[in-house]
Length: 270
Image (tube, rainbow, N blue to C red; front, top):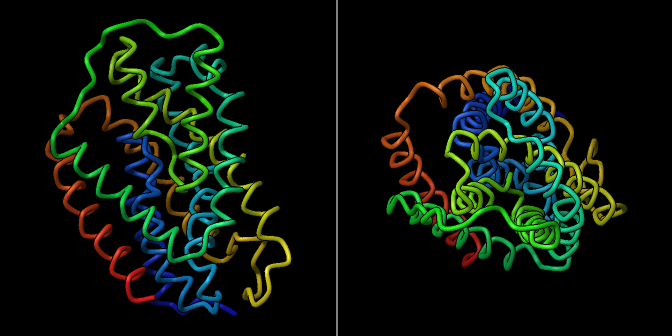
């Protein structure tokens, strides 16, 4: 099964926006990708019970590529705190796989509700401009492993890059916001890698999936989005160091509310 030209154009646009947001906000762009991919998967022959799973799995696979592109730009500016990446990664790897395992045992309706609720929470966080008070330093190794586990589990479950958990966590621990965003972008790769493996393994041999599907990863959509996102992620990373992104966050939060409403509506009428 091949993608129609209009769908390809829509996925290219999605990839451009998602890549830019990955670099700008450190969020991986997945909160845009999953609702749009849910619609695309429904029109590509994915069984209804696994539409959201395929959307999340494909979203995580794109973050593998997008994160590498955006983190390179952040690294060139010296903004990535690599010791934090190293300390959080073991917990993230285990948590992201666990999150993907949990997701594959939920039906598509429940998973859609969970994701829609997550979009509402994220939008409220952005609109309220919630910034945890920087009250402490980063924890020792056990605390970093636990924090990585929480970040990874939520990300693997929801197909997110982890920025909405890792950035507040780091700012709470006195990491400057630009360093937190850059480090979150670097954490996107282990999150996406472990989550992608989980969605491949746990989606293997799922009956009724369309051609060119690798577990819960739909390869045609993945390739189109990656081509676009790797071009715009460095632009977002550059903008993150020069723009006041408060206005962009408010606009994006409004879009998240609309997308969250779509996911909840779709789940209610499934």
